[in-house]
Length: 214
Image (tube, rainbow, N blue to C red; front, side, top):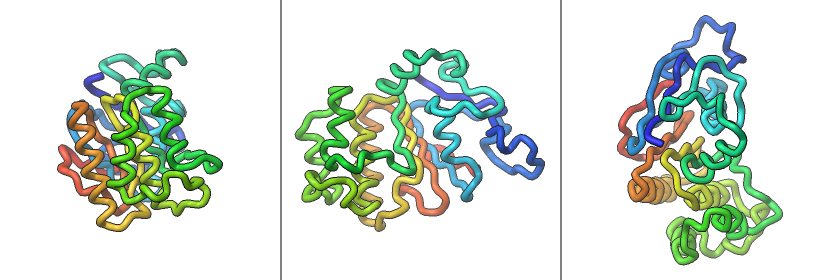
């Protein structure tokens, strides 16, 4: 997949609002593979909704979302499954890890489905992100910042053309945020993929192609 277009897209809950000032909603924008985007937003402006719309998790929006000129509303369940397996990755703001599993088990769940990353690479990422000693700890017993790093590793355990990262460093210090950014950018460059990250204040220190105000 080479590009994602949002044409006059708007969450249905905003349909009656007349005060919207946005670079995204009710606009025509194109996200291109290989570029890096930041979507800056205030709380309640729809950044997580945007990620859910693009990921096909929700469809309560007006307007059109196109993947390589094809309307995503026409996709079947099997097509969405294939897209999420090979072309789209998403790190949810609420992470959606399984608390009853260990950090490594959460990562392995995805990697066993995709077979994409080597165990050695996953181990290196745990080490790089400073959570190697927490690999066998239940997620329920980890801090939210530690969980964010686990979720990042899991999000990278698949091929993707676009990766959406929703508020990935809200609970990280600057040092760990920088490491996460470097890891993300390195893997995206290796795959020739686009990064789309959201923020309501603190954001990854990346070389952004374009910054949108939501």
